[in-house]
Image (cartoon, rainbow, N blue to C red):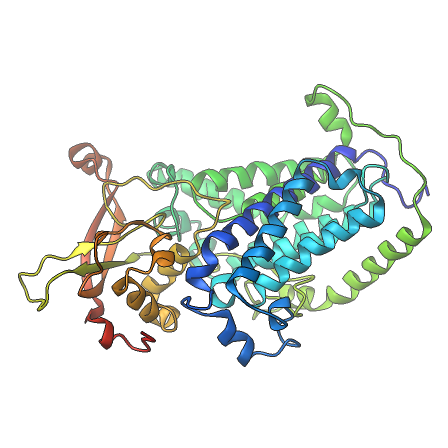
Length: 481
């Protein structure tokens, strides 16, 4: 059907679907590697407790029907296997109904995890990957031409992602309006990367140029996505370059990579043919009528569900990240409406002393991603997501963010819980657990160039106050042991 099929987007569809499959693979691997400590039957926020308190209609998940740690692991492994097969191109070669079914299963399994993931899964990129996953169901297979309507829906998703982020910045922190937010952001972002120290020390006039460029990319360029080619492709290319800059400057899970693969779907084949060694196949079978009807129905649903996200974007009370339905479809997005000026880090320590006093030696637990040892350079983890490390950043902002899960974390450390310890980089008590644990709040800042040359340290830290007072296992609030 000439009116239905998109001409010249074979490469764009392929890069989007393969990229999304790669991110699904990462998401399921993160779930498999971390769930026992965070959400397992004996985890910090157990799924069995959640499903007893929250009904299926409020948070649809297969785990309402059945939950064991082994079953969760099977769900994560199944999702990872399907994502890997899709990444390798196997799913594309299946008959159209089977291809759609694979994408549906990927979405349904990950939705089941997100809807019981509680605080650990409260980030905008969870809804983003799910919304993109629904659209992927209707992109067809290798024998079917990409539906033009779905490609437009992908652009609508990218528009909401970028434009919503731009609006929340302009409405939020004053430093976005006076172009000074990057004086602080590279240093105070949740999880700096290996280049963040260098980004922080760029000249301040360049920081202002960065912010101004960000405003143009998020508030002006997105409208170009709906103009004819080559304007739409140029707009997407600008977004891709901007997102790669963000990838280099910090760790934001798969948020930036989702924006990149959405942008790749906008670029026409003529662009890819100019830079890739071989052209994509453009020979397709006739599009089934039933598929046309389903895609048309999808478009109608997106139009209806877009009312609340659009209302949110034009509202003075704009929400930064919100899903307006339990299926996480057609959401609103945004990030860093406010920027912290001072970095506060929670440092967790333990001691083998029976009676801690002022002379007690306390040894630090080291996390994989969040700042700790001042001489340890920040690492690159994204698109892999270290969920505990990210929540520790929120704990440093306010203890209220950690009220439910931090005491159980301390209790697990007092038991040398193997699943929790796997989430850490270093356990200072490998032989037997500590007698007491505590946590202290520190102010961290990047070292200056002179301090870096003199000490080799990436960070300078100063103590603020106690965050969690020394406690034995029996003294930890809410301890189940």
